[in-house]
Length: 88
Image (cartoon, rainbow, N blue to C red; front, side, top):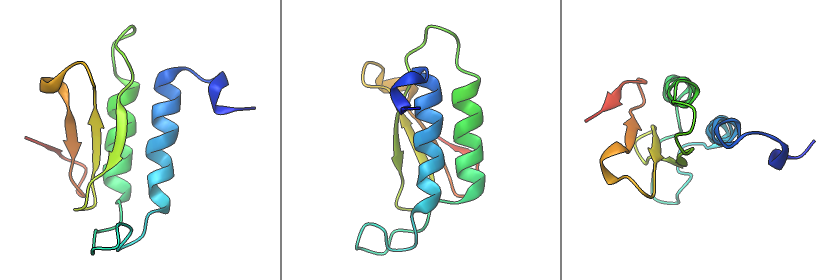
């Protein structure tokens, strides 16, 4: 089964889960590993998105969190810190 067979939201959740493989220093400049609480919070957020809302881009943050980013909506980006809490 290929990733293309999943919905865009499922693909985004898979990409978030893959961030668990990042270790301290993953960027070559001392970035923190992505934490389990940040991964869980980001997956939960994607799972709760309204049907029809586009899936976000998924990025690790250097502080150990997860960034969910929508290209067409600057005000809707969400960053989950290493504790799993959404950052302002």
